[in-house]
Amino acid sequence: MTTPGGPPGIATGVLELDRSVPAQVTNAVVKIGLFGAFAVALVLAPDTVAGKAMGLRAPLFLAPSVLVPVIAWRRHWRPYPHTADGLLSLPFLLDTLANLFRLFDNYAITDDILHVLNWALLVGAFHAFRFRNVGDQRDARLLGYGFGALAIVWWEIVEWLVSEDGLGGADGLALTYGDTVGDLLASSSGGLVGSVLAVRLLGPRVRVREPSPAP
Picture 1 (cartoon, rainbow, N blue to C red):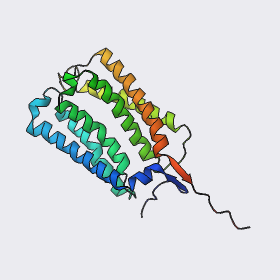
Picture 2 (cartoon, helix red, strand yellow):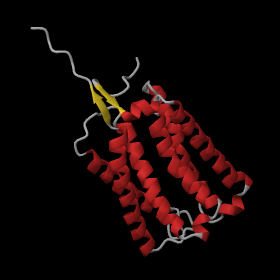
Picture 3 (cartoon, one colour):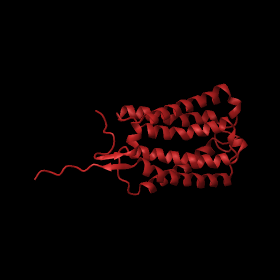
Picture 4 (cartoon, rainbow, N blue to C red):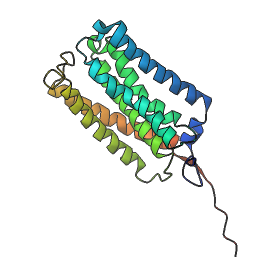
């Protein structure tokens, strides 16, 4: 049995995107790029990312790219959630590429930029999943903002766990109190922007009037 593509009587922007060829191609490119980046980081050029705990990052970063297709297949999502899948995978690709090209080490502002951008994308993914099943926009922006704020708290916890002071022993993360507070501010701000844009772009477009019951 096929799960209906979206809330009954409502056309959403995310469903239009999911059916489009550009969304399908973009999602494929992002996911291939993500797996390719980790192949380079772990096999071809491990010295480039020494001290970044890439071995511990790999399961966390690659898990969404594997789990979303499995869930979509098991729940018979039609059309396939290309928009949400791509938006969820893209932040992990950007973070991995920034480590591969040593942007974090050479340009301090890289971390702030990616925290803003990546959280906008993650919150966009949250809304992309949500609007496939829920057409209600009430408090949607605030809901997305809250999701982004909660996500950065857990991100910082996980980042500490893999650091030199935590369990992972990664000595190249340069974590400080100021860095953590800055990340919380940057990511929550990016999440707010992402929530506003996602609600506007991915939310309900047309409400179909249901036929009146016969007298």
